[in-house]
Length: 496
Image: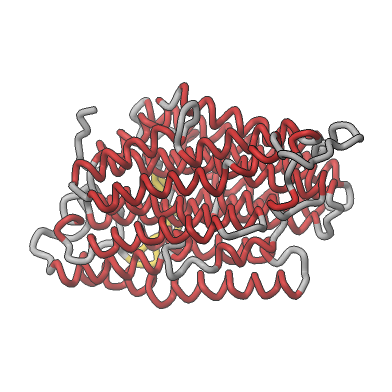
């Protein structure tokens, strides 16, 4: 094996962890502290891109840290689904750090050093989770991610922040212990392995009832995927500063959830077994219900971050649906939606934070005419909204197209109708915000003062993610090729 590639895989996971010490030491010098964070994030991205190029060239990159007992080890492997997740997370770590510099300073936040330390810890956990070679490794870093993001959720230190943190930690840890861990133990007993394998770990004569029950435990246990009724942690976590919301919704936590759902469906159950299980349709319709209900709840929220939080619950349901459809279009659609939703939703949260810092507004009802003073921010919000809705010229178009194709191929017409109705609801709860910002209507008096956008670093970050939404429409090939490669690795061919 190429030693340099193994070293790069090590560095991808360990560099953010080592950076926490440097961030702590330089805490009294903000410029130096943030230079350490940005430099580390750039090196991590460099390593991930090199791993991506090696994977494309056919290299096999594996790494074992520790063997607890035969078949139970902390080990890592570079494969297409993990690579897709790692590319998004490593790139958006840089962008979110740039944004956070402007936001945290502009908002005069306390405990900024602790914020950047926990942020780096979370990214280290994300990288380890993305490249996990088995369920045991994934579970360990799934929990590390939960614990490392808790101080970020409670960052403000207020009673409301502490209450939000309790809900966050309570739901994520309880679902993990009660369902996820049990599902892993049962997989070990019934399947005999926790390795991610092409075609899954269960043999052909496994009881559909038992395998179906294990699937239910997995879907409910992966609380970060926010399937109803285990979704409340996500709106509760909105008490956190906006860069944390961006981390939760686009870079790390929720993406770790749906990534895990995809890994379990494709490499633990396998796409051949999944449609034969008696509980798959039940979970498919539960995910569809989650998509629809979260959209309806989002429409009723006047707080912008709360509306975006419920929107995320809905969008995560799309990815779970694609995984449970267990066909090539569903897998491609889900994989690409991880990427398109990441860029679309992080753009919307960046805009929400920019509005709070520059205009001190958090309620949608107070944002009429904001396009006069914050034209760049509101234009970015419009483009980010189009990507979440799934219409040209944004990246969300392709992922939603493949998801709809997946429902048509399997004959799940109710699920298809749900996805289409949800997109209409997306229009209803997102587009009025930029519309009323630029066209406030009669009785509105334009402000006499000039343009006042958020601090420059925040503006640069949201411009980058907005361009990302557009580029993913024009050039979706890298993510599409990785999604196709997932099917190849899983033993499924895709003719499109």
